[in-house]
Image 1: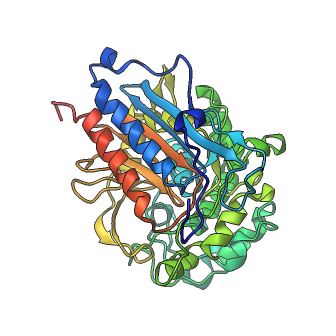
Image 2: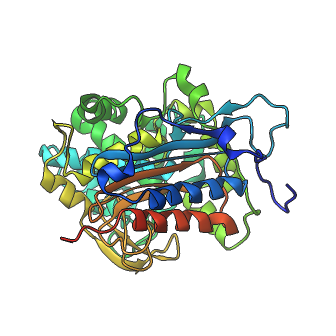
Image 3: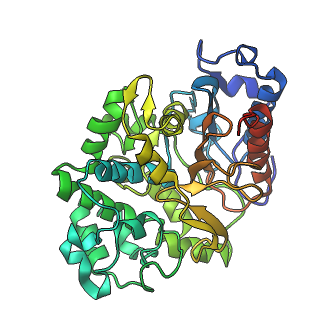
Length: 419
């Protein structure tokens, strides 16, 4: 394959690099679904992989709680554009964990919402009530609600925030953020906070509960549901199982590259490199290093679609979930992403026409992760899904296949007649 930009080598037979979780997928006809429409969803994923922009892709889609698709295609390791043709390759499977990057934010948000449910915090409290030193430079009025809704006025992280050497010493990162000056008054403008807010929320959790956010998440949400992954980072011995990210696609150019650098605190190529760093993978990076399989990520969003109760396990009150996904901004221009978005308190919301989750997804909620990770639930369709990718292109023509996949999911799982 010849290209003007780095791509992965694509084998002639896609079946040779495709894995389906055995004895898991429910036959569509048993759920009154059209088999051809469901197959068309996976065909779009195959076309996305065949574009060479992703070393590995995994997809899990649940309908009414049943797994309809749970598959992976490509290589978790050894087939990035920079890898030698004869490099050892590790096949991606549905059990391969990926880094969710910014799709980690809903997990962190739900930890905070759970604390609110238990009356340990209140969303309209100033952050400085829990972290007094955060009040410096006029930040004393920034609330937890401002942070969850991307209105805190501190969207751009100090460059050293992404330094892997600091990740294992979060106290220093919190100190950097406490000393940061806001760009504008809290609540004044909507601007996606890609990095900064996660560390602040994690510190609130630690000061309120006495536990680090990783431990609290595991004990209160993950363990009751039997999750293997879906937490911040992984144990040292599990690092080799995580799919390796690769920078692919056309070179990033201004103004898009400038926007991403400002939001992330470093060039996008460096972000990809950091995401593979063992220090990043074993640390707690609350805005961006939840590690999960597509299976577990879709199950987490199915928990929320079901109002906080899954498989008989009660995790959240239904009103806690409703509060978390309630709209806070309606197609308002985002001063970071320079596009109109709908946000709740921790989630990116769908819409009728311009939507992250396909057309006619007004009640869908979820989040994207840098750059082509999608985790979401659509209550109108009884669907929860996760598309995880290890390629990290910015703007590339083959992104069409992600949109097409989401459109085909809308066709395969139509809106319920009572909605």
